[in-house]
Image 1 (cartoon, one colour):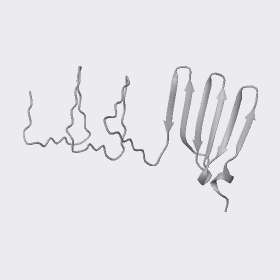
Image 2 (image 1 turned 90 degrees about the horizontal axis):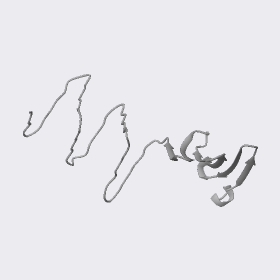
Image 3 (image 1 turned 45 degrees about the vertical axis):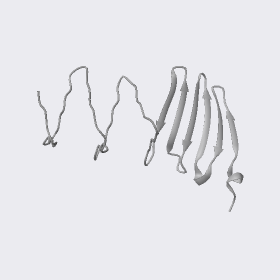
Image 4 (image 1 turned 60 degrees about the vertical axis):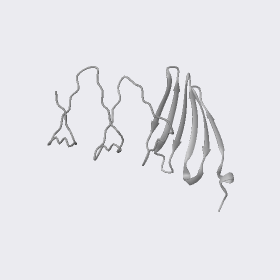
Length: 127
């Protein structure tokens, strides 16, 4: 069995429009760095070639794409997301922890459900 150091290899491919460098990682993964004009692309692909992580460095800024079994973010202070649009899509359940939850809106706030809506609390205030 070969050691991880022996698995590492560097492959450089060049054509007229792009240059690509590839490194073999453990468990059949591949790290590829490609430059195409003003765009640089860093990708990690699994053994079967499926994309796991892509960082696209563009003139407008970086674009991060990840495809994973599980993702975790952990911070000792806070996690902040700032964007014109934030979407969360959960096909089974969207769970919030036991901490206080606050939803604020400077405009309208709509709650839509395809089924029943239950509100349970010690005291419920409605305007």
